[in-house]
Image 1 (tube, rainbow, N blue to C red):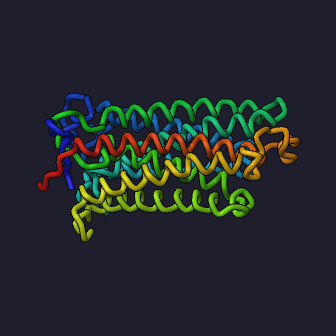
Image 2: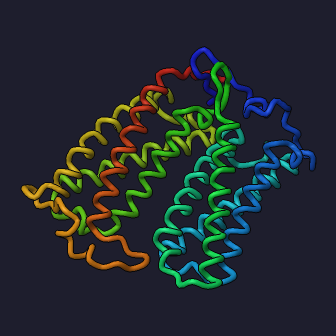
Image 3: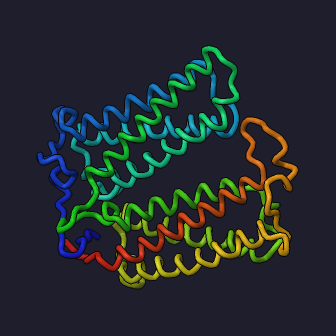
Amino acid sequence: MPVTVTRTTVTTTMSSSSGLGSPTIVGSPRVLTQPLGLLRLLQLVSTCVAFSLVASVGAWTGPMGNWSMFTWCFCFSVTLIILIVELGGLQVRFPLSWRNFPITYACYAALFCLSSSIIYPTTYVQFLSHGRSRDHAIAATAFSCIACVAYATEVAWTRARPGEITGYMATVPGLLKVLETFVACVIFAFISDPGLYQRESALEWCVAVYSICFILAAVAILLNLGDCTNVLPIAFPTFLSGLALISVLFYATALVLWPLYQFDQKHGGQPRRQMDVSCSRSHAYYVCFWDRRLAVAILTGINLLAYLADLVYSARLVFVRV
C-alpha cells in the first residue's frame, strides 16, 4: 500500500525521488550510466572483491569469518539480481513489490556490511599472523566498508521525501522496521546459549519480548514486500500503530529486567567482568558471557529508541490507495 508522509507525496517511477533528478530508464543498458546504476555497480564490485580476497587465502574460518563471507556473497548476489531486473525491464514480473524491495534490501545490505566491517577485523583479523592472509583480510575489510557506504548512500538517495507518495518501506518507519529486525537478529546471536537466560523467568520474558517484536516487525515488512497488506483483519495503519506501541512497552520492560537480573548481584547477576570466569580466555571467534550480556543490554536500548521513533513517525504517515 503506498503511503504519504504527512503533507508530502513521492513517485516511485522517477529516480528524482532518490534525489538524482532524472527519470529511471527501464530495460536499457543506459540504466548503468545513471547515478543509481553506477552506485549499484560499485556495490557489486566492492562485495565481489571482498569475498574474492578472503576466499583466495581461506581467511574465513569460524562463525565470524563465515558470517562475513555470507554477507559479501549474499549482497553481491542480490545486487546482481537487481541489476539484471533493471537491465531487462523485468520489474513488473518480479515476485516482490519493486516499490519496496530495492530500498529494503539496500538498508539490510548496509547493516550487513557494517556488521562485517566491524566484526571481521575485531574478532578475526587481529588474530591472524602477519603475512599474505592478513593483508588480504585487511583489504577485504576496506572493500566491505566501501560497500557499506555505497548501500547507505542508496538508502539516502531513494528514501521518501516530505510531500511524496511512495511505498511504505521507503519511509522512516519502514526503514526503522529493517533496523529493528536486524538488531533483534544480533540479539538472538548473542543469546544463542540458553544458559544466559534460563535461570530466571524474568530473563525468559526478555527473550519472549525480542521474539514477539521481531516476528511482528518481520510480518509488517513481508506484507509490504508482497503487496498484501489488505489480508489483515484490521486496517494496516492500525496494525502498524499497535505494533509500535506494544513493542515500546515490551522493550521498556526488557530494558529494566535484563540489566537487573544480569548485573545486579542481589538478583544473581555479575556486576563486574572479572567475576565471569569465561572472560579470562582470549580467543578468536569467542565472546564471553559477560560481554554478551552487556551487548544485549545495549542493543535492547537501541531497539527501544528505534521503536519509539517508529511510533512517533508512524503518526505522520497518510495511507492512500492507488
